[in-house]
Every structure is written in C-alpha cells, then in structure tokens.
Length: 471
Ligand code: BYC
Image (cartoon, rainbow, N blue to C red; front, side, top):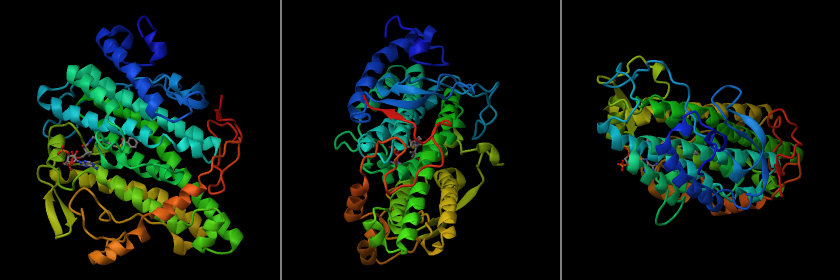
C-alpha cells in the first residue's frame, strides 16, 4: 500500500494519511485481511458485482453511498462518530470525570479483551455465512447477504483500528489472531459459542440477523457508553449499519410467514406435512428455528451473576444500553431479583448487569414477534402465533445450564425433556427439509417458493433490478 492515497483506498475520518504508525500497522494487516476474505468470505462470488452501500464519511450523505462493486474491491473504511465536546464518563464510580482519549494503564487488558471479543464476532459471522450465496432465494437476498458480510468486515476493521491505534504490539498481535481463529474450527474456534454454529440455510440466516445481530446492537450500545472515547465513537457509528442487518432478519422472517400463510390459504389447511409438500415452511417449524437462535443468542450476554460485568461498569468501561434512560448510574445500593433454578434470589445490581441487558434485549425481540403475529392473526390462524422461548430454555451459560426447562419455562422431568427436545428445536429431519427448499434463484425479480417478495427494492430501485451481476 506504499505511496497510496489513503482516503481514496481506505475512507476514514481518523487522519490515517498523516499517521505513519497506524499506516504501517495496517499495511501489514490489510493483505492478510484480503487473503482471509478471499479464502473465508463468501465462497465463489469474488468476481460478482453487487449493488452495495459503502460508508465514505459519517455525514448523512456519506455513510451510505450505493454502487456496483466487486467485494474484494470494497472500500472498508474506518469511521468514528463525531466527538461529543467535553464528553464525561456517564456511569460507575468514575462518573463525571472526563472521558479518556487514551487507554488508562490499569484497564488496558480488560479493554483489550472487550474489543477482541467484540471484534472476533465480526469475521466469525462472515465465515458462518460463506456458503449461503449458493442457495440464495433471490438476487435481492443475495445482495443483502453480501451487504451484511462486507459490513461485518468493516466492523472487524473498526475493532482492528482500535487495537492498532491504542494497544501497541499486543494490539497488533490480537489483530492477527482475529484472522487466525475460525468459526467452528476444532483447534482455534471463535470465542463466543453462537459464532461457532453453522448457518447453512437462509431460515437460519434470517434468525441469526434477527436475534444475534440484535445482541450485537445491545453490546454495541453498551460499549458506546464506554469512558474510553474512541471505543464509544466507533460503536456509535457501527450501530447505524447494524440496523440494516436486523431489518434483513425481521423482514426475512416476515416474508416467510407471509408466504406460508398464502400456501395455507391455497391448500385450505394448516397441516404441516401438506405445507411442506407444497414447498413452504410450516409455522411450527419456523417456531423451532426461533427457539434455537433465540436461546443461543441469549447466551451471548454472559452469566446472570458476573464479576466481570460489575467491574466493567464500576470502572466506566461498559455501561448499560441507553444509560441515560436510568436514574441511578452508580448502582452501589441497588439490587435485582433473579429467577434461579433454586428459586428467586436478590443479587447486587452491579453483578446482575448481564441480566439487565438480557431483559431489555428480550423486550426488543418481542417487537418483531408482535408484527408477525398480527399478520398470522389477520389470516385467521391466531392459534399458530409465534412466541419467544423462555430465557431459561436450553441455556449453555449461566445458572440455567443443563436444567430441563421447556420453551414455556416449565421445569420438566429430565427424561421428558430429552424425549421432547426436537419438538422445540429443529431435528436433523427438519434441517434436511429446510435445506431441500434452498434452491438457488438468480433471475432478477424472481423469488424462491418458500418466501414472499419484499415490499420494496433497495434504495428505491425496483425489485427486478439486477442486484448482483455474475461475471
Ligand atoms: N460463549 O463473567 P461472564 C455481535 C465467557 S455480537 C463462550 O458472564 P462477561 C455480532 C466469558 O467471556 C456482540 N464464552 O462474562 C452479532 C468469560 O470468560 P473469562 C458481541 C462465554 O464478561 C452478529 C466467562 O465466560 N459483543 O456484535 O460478563 C454478527 C465468564 O462469563 C460466553 C461482545 O462480545 C459465551 N456465550 O460477559 C456479527 C461485547 N458468555 O473472561 C457481530 C464484548 C460468557 O472468564 N464482550 N463467556 O475468560 C463482553 O461484553 C463480554 O465478554 C460478554 C460476556 C458479554 C460476551
């Protein structure tokens, strides 16, 4: 990258053109990123031109520039939201002190760990989704997949920027490790559990973008509160992109619901096997996918009781999402009632912050459910309404690990739970059926038979637009 025009090749608002140290670190890392993208990113589509938005500045007219681009030529940029003048730490024991422009020595390793954990999820999701392009239900969906993928790539850049700019040699080493761990790898897996689950069909992709990207929203919101100002500003900008990913999930599931209802009407039955024979996803099957991805994403908030969460809050490193909506920002006196398998327990609020976040996340998850259920009810199938599983169902982290709880939150005899598990999450046969639906459709404007068309195209273009052009 020697002698190149940095703002052209790497759009940024971090003064990259004049920062030799950062340039050197990125010059070393960027070719490895491109190699990683080519080998672990969307398989077989590197030559295709996709109609993508690129962020070229943080201004209203610059954060989403649309145009046809080959993914390896995508201009992954580095952007921080505009600074807030005289910003102060808004919570914890250091509340009211000026926000930090450099990493305080005593919090260096904790902050690095938070940034690495966040950064690790971004390339992980690209790896999880790398084969989906082969079975896309439409060009519109294929383009959305690629948009999500390149933006997760940019989110990786965002975290790598922080590591390079603020953490010296350790940061550079961590940035390399972010490309060395791989989703599902037996020896070097991704850090958090959900990011090692394969996403091998589009129903899973819609669920992932609905549930798991929404966890991303909540984690980014809490890091946007951080006293470490560059982290806060980076996360604030990332949140503008995250909204589209959740849109893909919410409208994707909504389109599946609509198509299924059409098929039910045409057949005059809600019999799942008849619906499957007609090539659509019966609602109980969709419910199983919701149960699977929601319960997996709930684990991403960590343990209900966490000394990490308490210390991160008290030290001003990680706040609650939308911290300003609360009145108590110190939480030294407050407690929270927690439901545990041993009964209700009163816990210090500081230690229970992962749970506080999980609860607000679940409320946010309900919004889509209400929308889909309105459509189901209007079609006269209220009895088939969809629901979120209990937060105690199928947990792998926290006090409910290994407890036989059904999606309604009832504790069952172990033998009954084991026998019924695949009534609640997809069985191998369910997954094989869903995979059988995943036939690639790439004629502009056409949709696969299991999903309804979206209400509109991208950026005011018609649905028939050729959103991805193959070479
Ligand atoms: N899997 O004290 P605890 C996104 C570990 S998604 C495996 O409760 P803490 C995106 C934990 O690391 C958002 N391990 O943990 C979405 C800890 O290990 P150590 C990602 C887990 O620290 C879609 C130990 O268990 N955001 O952006 O309170 C597409 C004790 O746990 C898991 C972040 O990661 C798990 N599920 O909370 C693309 C934000 N859960 O330290 C992107 C930064 C816990 O004892 N990270 N553990 O060795 C954090 O804030 C926290 O690390 C966590 C965990 C919330 C993840």
